[in-house]
Length: 392
Image (cartoon, rainbow, N blue to C red; front, side, top):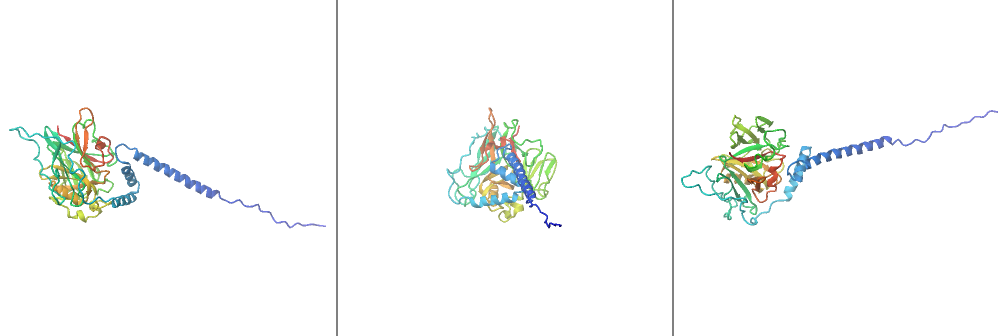
């Protein structure tokens, strides 16, 4: 008797092969954590860098430097669009008396006065009678009892009549200028310091912001001390410091060009005022002329620099300014060649100083709505700026 057994082979149940999925998830989570740690360290470094830049300014600059320029630009446009300056009204408290104004005694009889002739008062740009003190020059820094720096305040146009812009007039026969680097822009090592050093604190007369970022936003270059940090661009508006400490403005390789007398060149956009006339593209120009963030029409904080026919140097800064109204102020102050500098409340900054024998100099803001503290220039600056110092 024989027996046979037809038994089917028994297959053990398969375990779900999820190890690869688990590994993938862990890898993604790990990569995300590493990314967040690296980004967090980078942002922390930006927020804790030296200087007095605001948190918003530091985050915006970090974003632009890390491929988020488009997002930062969009956010800024939304902010500006939702915060249009008020129309009409009068400045609260009227036209301000310049803080730190100093009396100037006339030169004794028979004694020749030093320096340039006093500038003429600035006529009204508001389309109405001048307010008390509007457009009148006040001396804020003297050298041997002569006016070295004067300031004036005025309403910028006939619409934004509750705002006040500031104008700073500098006498180059008494004050010398210097382009000073930022530790980020242009970065690197330069003979000039990124702040007002103790050795310069007793001679500093004024300081103000330079132009747009050198990462392409300025459409121009940077040259100083015989070295080019960013290539100079033909036709770009250029603030040139000469080796004797005087400044001029012009289109590069058209009105001004390289020579042994050129100490530094800071370029930004195109000429705003030339031959005493405001650039007609101030109301129509595109991003190459007036910047990619908001162009020419938005009324925001803006700044500019120019020179008069007799060589005086003029800085303008204020709120609620378009490119055209900025140019109009330069023109009204007697500027024959001028250029826009920076925009945005985080960067527009005009400051003048009084010496203090017992410590750092005391700084004063040029216009009431200025947001950058005067102490900004006593600390390392992330972006380049201009310092003006009394001559020996």
